[in-house]
Length: 264
View 1: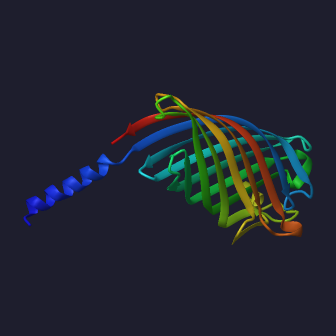
View 2: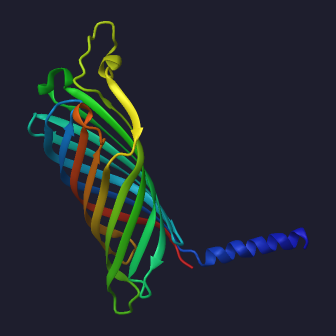
View 3: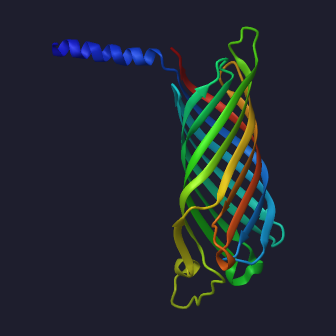
């Protein structure tokens, strides 16, 4: 086979693969409200509770049965019992593979993994020497998701509504967080050294999960409008003075803008 024939064959294979591939690229943005319930023994021996405002944005790319998505969320929470606040940021990068469609193609099931990172900065003047503290977590996660399309048009070609449920479980992670009752002498220390005095870092499996359930309205122009409830739970698994536990309850309104779609 000549080199010219090889190039022709490769071109046909590439074009043939693209002919059966549907690709799409979406951007999304959302706003939500929620509640925080935090217990950080390394900072204070009682629960911190309050209301939250949340902003969410990200992007996704899908082709064939695969989907890559990234998103970032910013939380601002008012700690009612301490007259303080908690500012948190959350990053997620996930890969999902659609491994099963039912014969009627109404139900879809995905599995995959995700890299998840989150951090928070608490400010509570009533805690005196522990008035300001920060936590950083990173996790490798396992993800499962199910979707159900319904409310089709008369031609059965377009589902107006899609319901979904997603479960994310941490597999292994790392943390950087304050130690118990940290007190430092600021003399001879710069501001950053003093703030980080007594912090600890460790790697382990962190008990927790993320559940996300919602409903999409699928518009004809391939944009979507959705509402969902998300529950985030994470704790260190350590007892006594090292115990950390955090829960976010959030309800979102999300807009998805389809930027590129190619169909066979």
